[in-house]
Length: 300
Image (cartoon, rainbow, N blue to C red):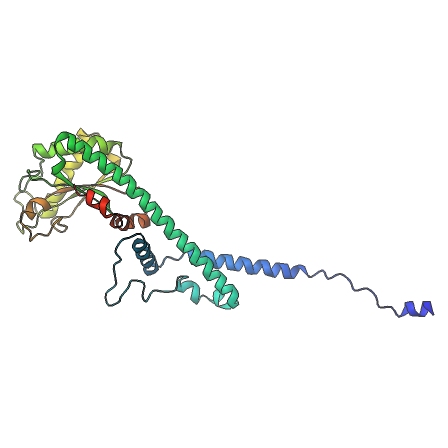
């Protein structure tokens, strides 16, 4: 009886050696999610970035600009995760729960990225403010503090050679004696700054062809070259840190309709360029707008 019962016992089931496929499939799903997140992070959406930038600036106390025809710059902006991600076939094939996880991860990373960028802009603005104070201190010691105007914005630290005294004679690119004194006073401080420097030449708004130059562009370029050479040859600022631009009368410093604007707009700007990436540099103006006291103090 016992032997017969043994003959009818069911054999033991063999081990399932294919269970690893479940783990493997889960791993592939996680890898796919990772690649989707990386893809989404690599897509730069200008409108989304501008909206986040404005929101951060407003949160730090600056005024927020608005788009024409809307109440807020945050209106009509694409999903935070980006249209490329939302419309991708891989993303659409994910279950709803996993799609939400991907969107949350992308949004969190984007927020951290913008916060890091804003923090870098704040750090660079602080460095430029230190340089500005050193330059103004040198000018005060020389009695030349009223011969420049300074501002800090997305271009960097802009030192404009404008004065009640003559810096450049009409139609001439040669610095006056006082103009040379201003440049020579700035040079020792600029020589110690690691940032690149750009010299921008400008003319006033008078629609008169210069006597010694073909156009306003030529005159503004010649004035920029004069200051650049003075910084390099007398001020010993390394030439590899120097560059120049010429704008003619296209970028006045003050409204050309104002009295005495011609004397102010006829100038050379020495620009201490930001030592950071383009995105952080673009936020420096927002940082300075959030510091009304510091910004006012930056006007020399």
